[in-house]
Amino acid sequence: KAKGLVKKMLPIFKEHQIQMQNTMTAVDKSPYPVIFAGDFNAVPNSYEYYLASKNLKDAFVEAGSGSGTSFHEFKFPIKIDHIFTSESIKALNYRVDRSVHISDHFPVLASFKIQ
Image (tube, rainbow, N blue to C red):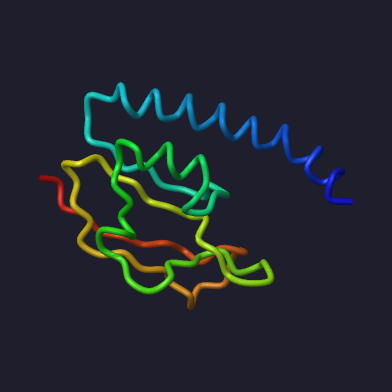
């Protein structure tokens, strides 16, 4: 069973890799400060997270507290939604609003100061 699952997932992992490489190329070429946020479907020790955090800061690491978990439809909550910023953008706060139940993800909210 595991072998079949891995075989199914490999093309998805490859597609994520290509998408992240293309996105980060665009982010790196931006002449403006960047806020890059979304459902990455990638935990903090993933390739996608590594690639994004290579040249960007994780707003949760900078201004969050607790677990930062936002996806709750799994056996246990996980952090797969992320907000990254350019160096010149300072995260002032970061929180997950667990009172909103309109999706399988809780909203991730942050405020910033552009320096």
